[in-house]
Image 1: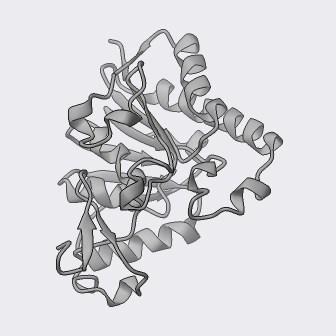
Image 2 (image 1 turned 180 degrees about the horizontal axis):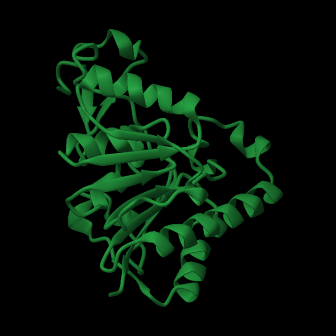
Image 3 (image 1 turned 90 degrees about the vertical axis):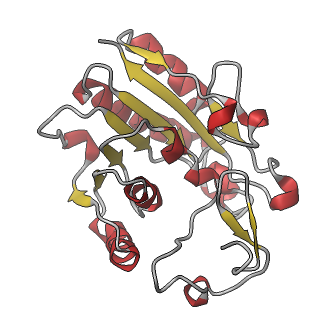
Length: 242
C-alpha cells in the first residue's frame, strides 16, 4: 500500500505520506482500506493483549478502529456525541464494527468487569507541537494541573471497575511529566493492587529509544526525524493483581 500511496512504510506498519494531499482522494479511502492517524497515536492499541476491549475517551476513534481491525469486540466510550460521529462514519466506510457508548467515563460502569481497557485520557496535547505549534501558547501550567487531576480520577475509576488480572494501557499525547511519569508513579502508590507491565522493544519495532528504564514509552517529536518525526506520547501498561 505504501508504494501505491507514494508513501513510506514505518517500522510499526503505518504509511506516512511524503507529500501534502487530500486523504479522501487516496486510492483505497472510499473502500475503507485506510484512515488517518499519527504514527505515535497508533502505538497504544498495539500493546493491549488479545480479546474484547473498552476504549475509554475514544473519540475521534482511531484507536477503536485499530482494535476493531484486530478482530476484537470493542466498546468505544466518549462523552462527546459530536466527536463520536466521526467514528460512526469511519466504521461504516471501513466495514468494521464497534459498540458506541455516549457517556461521561467517570460515571459509566460496564455490566461485566472488563479485562482489557485502553485509556487515552484527555490531556494538554503538548505532544502535538510539531503539527500544532500554537499549543505551546494555548495551554498553561494551570491547564496541565487540572488535566492531571482528571487523569488521576479516570485512572482510579478504571482501576475500580477492572477485573482481576485485567490489563490497562494508559496514554496521553503530552510531553508533561505531570501527565505521564509522575501520573503513573502516583497511581501505583495509590493502587498497590496494580503492577506495571513493562513494554518491550519487540512490541514496538524501531522505537528502542522511546522505552525508559521502567518499561514505559515516551515518544518525542525528534524520534524518526528522517521519516518526519512523531507526536510526543506517553504510554504505560498495568495489570490488576488477583
